[in-house]
Amino acid sequence: MNFKLTEEQQMWRKAVHDFCEQEVKPRAAELDASAEFNTEAFQKMGPLGLLGMDIPEEYGGAGVDSLSSAIALMELGMACGGTALSVVAHNGLGCAPISLFGSEEQKRDWFPTLAMGTNGLAALALTESGTGSDLVGGVKTRAELEGDEWVINGNKAWITNAGVASLIVTLCRTDSAGGSRSLSMIVVPTKTQGLHIHPAEKKMGVRASPANALTYENVRVPKDHLLGEAGRGLHQTLEVLDGGRIGIGAISIGLAQAALQEAIGYAKERETFGVPLTQHQAIQWMIADAATHIEAARLLIYQAAWLKDCGEPFSREASIAKLFASEMAEQVCRNAIQIHGAYGYSRDYPIERMYRDARLMTIGEGTSEIQRMVIAKRVVS
Ligand SMILES: Cc1cc2nc3c(=O)[nH]c(=O)nc-3n(C[C@H](O)[C@H](O)[C@H](O)COP(=O)(O)OP(=O)(O)OC[C@H]3O[C@@H](n4cnc5c(N)ncnc54)[C@H](O)[C@@H]3O)c2cc1C
Image (cartoon, rainbow, N blue to C red; front, side, top):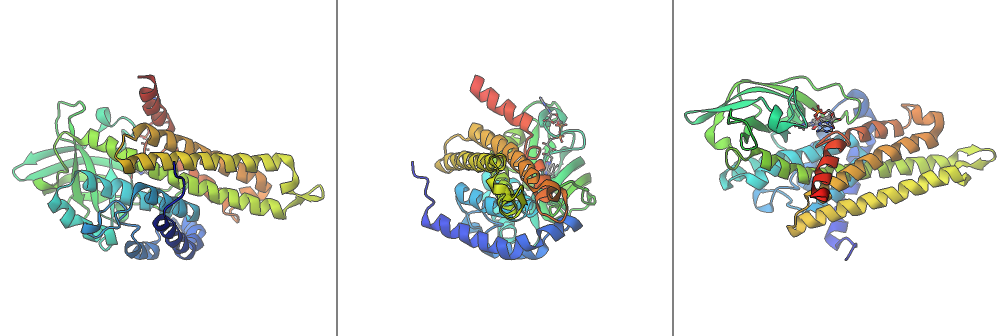
């Protein structure tokens, strides 16, 4: 086993790190406060490769391996949870289904602009107002074939990037009989008539990333906007989410790492009982536990990404890594606030933002409960 990153991966990490230090981190607090999307940073992400991580080079993307993708998301997570979420949703949710199931023509049509972000980002719409975890039983958005067009009616909720997207991959029910072969993925350009994108949700954290509810009212798209085969939507969704979970786990590690750095910096400066906080054993143990858990999570993410890159099954490992990393990040941010005392509770310090951002990671792309179900199914069988 070789845990050393290749020279190329190290250079990629440094390039993303430098970009985050200049374009992302300095605006994180301001954009959290105003719930604004970092348009300027996203305009510069295309040429760097951050918007084409899942897009092969032949279609204008960076086509990086999963480990490099995870490394980039760790760096982005360290700088700004909201910006990192929009990047992972664009690559791992919006572009990945086209990469995995799209035809040659679909890739040629959509990828070059998505990789540069010139017309906007990509989004994936699974969740509805009435369902999130139970997609098979719950999805009510229907798509019916009329001649050469799909006609879509229904709603979606909490769709990251919808407000800044050029297209939304939409999970629709295409067979009213129900069951695991009744769902399909259809690509809906956001300019299509009848698609209403509602104002961004007012969120607790990851506020630099817009999430919107959508209404589809007789939305008509050409028949060839279907991704892969009709009826494969559930299997496609599960495959996409496996990859996406590595991304959410990686952002969690970035958030935890940033929180730990803040806590160490503060603990070195603050004195109680005549010594810096770092000299109290209770504080040292919180720091030691955080460092240990971050390293464990990093190895789990590396393992899942490595399996994916090898073409091996990685669903169980992705769920384990996402579950551990997201719950770990919440705990590390919680303890980092504890180390800050009252100042940890202040909006003048970045730590409370990291805590709010980390809270999402145990919910998005499958809650912790759903991860435990996935893991148990594979461990028990
Ligand atoms: C900021 C943000 C961004 C998001 N971005 C996207 C996006 O881009 N695209 C998208 O499609 N969705 C997105 N979502 C939605 C997200 O994926 C869902 O919220 C998530 O999957 C959970 O679904 P739900 O909210 O409907 O909860 P529910 O499914 O209603 O679950 C409620 C609670 O019950 C638990 N639960 C459910 N079923 C079981 C069970 N069988 N056993 C035990 N416990 C169970 C859940 O774990 C949860 O704790 C986003 C959500 C947020 C908050």
